[in-house]
Image (tube, rainbow, N blue to C red; front, side, top):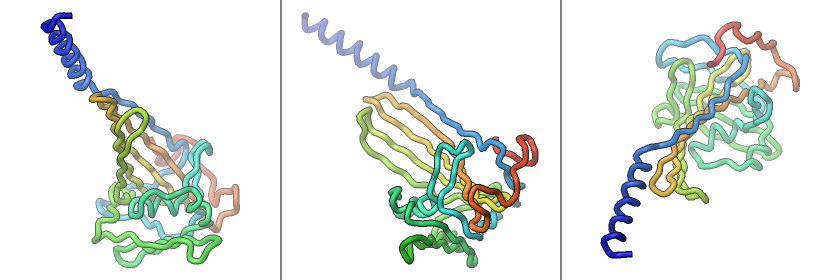
Length: 213
């Protein structure tokens, strides 16, 4: 191959890669909250009343996924939460003092976990009837490329249950091609006072009241 042909090939390759880089793929996974009843909207800036005692293990609408409330509340401030940390907490108590939420997890070890979310320090914000904990971000390398992701966790209360809406947006760089993605998952944590496997009040049929879209 001549020198000029080699240069021409490199230019074509560069143009091909550049064109691919300008076209970002997008992968979206949106989970529905099913027939879970959503609370009515609150005045702008008003926080939902999350005070109560909840089981630490929450389930998705299809019961195929589970999450640990102690991890969801604390991991944005202290990093990732290992499953073994969540398993040692049986229930979580939430109380409000002024603009600060005091959170304590109780389990096999005393004390299991404890902490607080303070409005002044930007730990949370309230919008549209939900309390959103400060977003957490991660980055790292995978077999496919360089990964970036940001997760926001929003909470509210409905019919005695603590509801969580977890939304994640991510970016995967494969060579110079960006692949964007997003996902939304829902979890529900029962109040401690309700019997295992039972609801304090039954779910309404889909379409009744305010249901998540």
